Length: 412
Image (cartoon, rainbow, N blue to C red; front, top):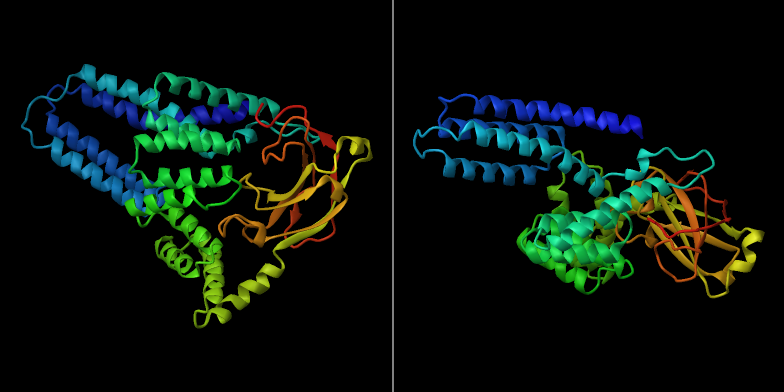
């Protein structure tokens, strides 16, 4: 963890060296005009956009949108005469603000999309990540407290929603997203994230309100990839294959040529075409169907004898697969009852929420099983659980032993 933090600090410091000194130098040139300073700043911003686009950290549509915004600001700011540039005091203030903003934004983005649990090495005995989870939970709690005093901070609500989603607390994530969306109703990406979290919170279904939110997102931005993918999934689940085909075909036209998602979208698109009776659909789906034959895992879940007295017949048993390396979200999930134990299981792509997150998308997975007294999808204190070692997708005969009792709820 120490090495990670040191490396992160060095990288942030390096980024600041490229940003802050030029601002300070500009503030020290008393002869500079406002137009010259503005033009130089905007040129730097445009160059940074181009670098991000080439590095693949910025999508083409986001690059174009940001490029237009910068050009608009440049036209508005430049051409107001050769008045002296802002005082060096203001420039230094901007430099200080950037110096604070860069590390804060970096931490915020990491909390939203990173894997804080990976900072602390896992114990050799498969021990818990409680320390890291507690630290992350504390950061999220502080953000939630701050937003009570600043309820109009739309960006803060969006960040809180993403943080809750990382923790698997989708109900709270959807509430935070709702508050962000109320303050930024024209942000299509925010609406797509909101619909995703709400669907997870209401039992992994896009029916109802999530689908309405997706329609709003696509009305604002018809090319939002996440909204199109989810809208296609929602249509497919309603057996509306024509709409699913329309959404997913549009996605294929938007994805970069080297995107890993293209193959998964093509597989789902071929299935929708076949079910829709599209000419050539069966031929297009033949090869993916063969591939799906090896995109499943099977085995047996057993309960350790020492825990036999702690399972009631009506307890819910969740059996799920998640990527060995990648997102923590389950790729396939099966629900059984305590009375079914020991139980044979098979997990495949038909048990995934959507075509973009399924077993066939990952080569190695971990199979987990959990007995829940509350039937809550999130782990709770008193739940019983166990998991397999990482295995290759397509493996059969897996043995999963439920042998551990959770002492605290997830994220506590």
